[in-house]
Length: 311
Image: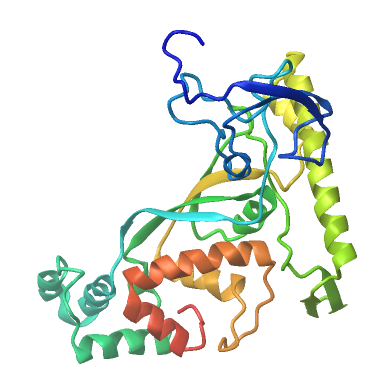
């Protein structure tokens, strides 16, 4: 063992071959060194599988093999985190009251967001939502960090009511993380466009989807790596990557814009107008709504009470 290497660092125990679509989904059939102490569950979760004391944590259990290469990882979820916000129910109130109070509304502008609002304040928010006086709901801001497959971002950016900055496949090598539908994801579309629903698939269909998505993703990433290794520019090599590869972005918007987004990208029995979003973008919307509810609970309650119609 070399100097400075922890005694807990895994040692090579055997060499075996893992093919595409097996194990933690290596890129191709090739010899892989297997190490004692490697935690496969940690690898599947996106970690290295190695103890923190190791001097140079590899990207996966095969990273110290004869043919090192990145591990293709698969997820069935999305990430949504609040980065920063300036958003509270009180922001709606001072913006609305300038209409009738003019300069006198300044006294309420720096109001503490934690301060309990009066029944009159609650009534004003409900009135604004009911009668669709929308601009007072724009005087706030929320920035979210989102990780999701690229096909979700293409739907996201149809909403031209937010500011977006996305990870670039031209300026960095993309990570081998791909989306695969979970076992409870509906697979069968029934009905015609504009009047359809999705129903669960059977075990055979789920297995077909799971195996096909994993194998195609691993194969595409192997081709991507092959072109990069040959000196091909990232912006060209990325052309082979499928839409289920994960990307990341920042999204900044106000409460009125978010309500518009939620009205279209969530399916809710209490909504005045039905919506039929793709499940993956709905997963993002649900997480964003949960965060927003904590920031502006009275505004959210009024939104729900009025049939989830954006003012």
